[in-house]
Image (cartoon, rainbow, N blue to C red):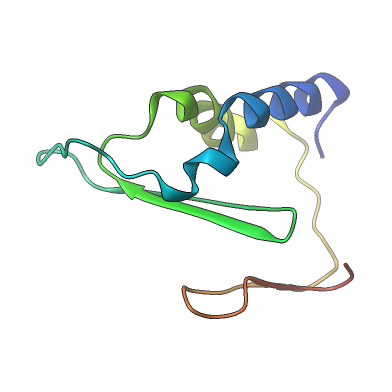
Amino acid sequence: KLTGPQLDTLKYLLQHSEIKKMQLWSPKSHAMDVPPIIFTLYYNDQKLSIQTNVPPMNMFDLRAFLEASYQKVALVRDPKKHQFVEENEPLYKGNGK
């Protein structure tokens, strides 16, 4: 669970990462000596997935926040079952809305 300030930070980073504009983004250059990064976000019943060696600059801070978040939040087991799916399948199968 996120604290109030953590949630505010996440909301800010999501707004400034311009997720909706990133749907059709593709990198203009490829770094061959680094492993690919697959960045997938599920939000508002939508999925954004980007595979790249060089993440877009507007997602640097969001990525850093998400990668470090597990160290800064109180992890709580979710009693609901969730199933994330691959490409060409229904987006997300969760309990509830």
